[in-house]
Image (cartoon, rainbow over all chains, first blue to last red):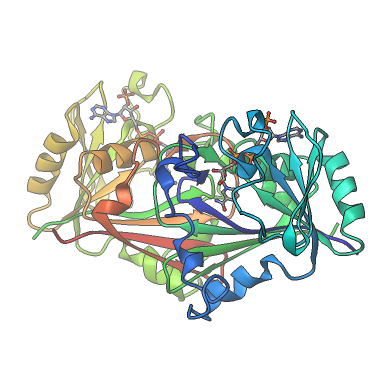
Length: 210
Length: 210
Ligand SMILES: NC(=O)c1ccc[n+]([C@@H]2O[C@H](COP(=O)([O-])OP(=O)(O)OC[C@H]3O[C@@H](n4cnc5c(N)ncnc54)[C@H](OP(=O)(O)O)[C@@H]3O)[C@@H](O)[C@H]2O)c1
Ligand SMILES: NC(=O)c1ccc[n+]([C@@H]2O[C@H](COP(=O)([O-])OP(=O)(O)OC[C@H]3O[C@@H](n4cnc5c(N)ncnc54)[C@H](OP(=O)(O)O)[C@@H]3O)[C@@H](O)[C@H]2O)c1
């Protein structure tokens, strides 16, 4: 069975998955890199990195994934839609290595890049986008890659099977919140929490069996 | 040295320390008892309860405390100020056993109850309230007892030395948030997180040495 999964979604204590304002110079706004420092220290990110609980969670990101869905604000800074040459933040060989669907109200033709990443642009409901990604994933799982807006929409639509959230000991104060509009989410999921010596907490949500 | 401490402050994943609306029938609004179930299962609360990490944290609540400061909304349901006979939720022998200062814009004469609890009513700034409580604590520590509004105000004023927050795997969606207005709180504190087999996460904040 092909599952829908979220991985390595990093939030502050107050639930923000990005700071503000987002820009070309500061993709995460005033949060800078602070939400992902835990990940940069793992072997998943850096050959010489740590191999403990943070790494164990981090590396599941790509295992068994056949397609990703991301939001327009993850794909580029505000205004990228006006730049016909924008191909994402990640250069000529993006780290996705699968068909990758960008949700946007201003779709454009698909872009084929090296290493197996093809960006497709979709103006579609979460359910329809998931159907397209599922088909492209040829039997493997679909990752919902973020940002918070898109993850929240897929959670609200009941489309997420597994979610891994990393809570970082920061109070960001402003940005885009993950939890808004999700009252009672715990009724649909088994939730586990494990703290790491690095200071972050890994939260896993698994869709509860009916 | 007399410290200012917060203990057993229980919040949801989305940071709410109470649900809504608060009323005589439902002091925590739609949250019900869900924020404190972790505590009811400990020996601190119930002789036959658990003795692991949840209990270890819970029982520090009273150790070395000489006074408490609480908010008007912890002391009673909306409107208690109009009831001259209201003496708090806790009956004739409240569990505080120290001078206890209730912050309210409508102060009334002090109330002496059994077991060492005296309620004093103060319309004062956090700093002035702390000075009064500190004096009453005769050398022991002062606990900021909640709710979130009062804890947040004391944090914002830089008056809290140690804080213990318990994060419960619920998304409440509405109520009173702890973290609002506290951007950058981590700069002033050493933060530790530890997960419990019960599913909650204990977060401790210790004021960083200058
Ligand atoms: N903390 C983490 O782990 C993490 C992970 C990933 C990303 N991020 C960061 O989060 C930020 C982006 O997150 P975000 O919440 O602001 O935005 P986002 O989820 O990336 O994108 C939201 C935007 O996508 C478009 N969109 C969403 N659903 C759509 C639909 N069904 N149909 C058509 N268009 C749709 C809309 O843009 P338009 O209306 O403009 O088309 C919408 O405003 C970036 O800073 C990124 O770097 C953080
Ligand atoms: N989750 C937990 O662990 C926990 C812990 C404790 C309490 N609670 C719950 O939290 C809720 C209460 O929290 P809350 O945030 O709504 O309110 P609160 O912090 O208990 O009280 C806030 C109120 O206290 C008064 N006040 C605060 N500072 C003052 C000052 N400097 N001078 C004068 N008056 C001042 C004001 O009331 P007036 O303007 O009316 O005077 C203010 O609206 C209750 O449901 C309680 O059961 C939860």
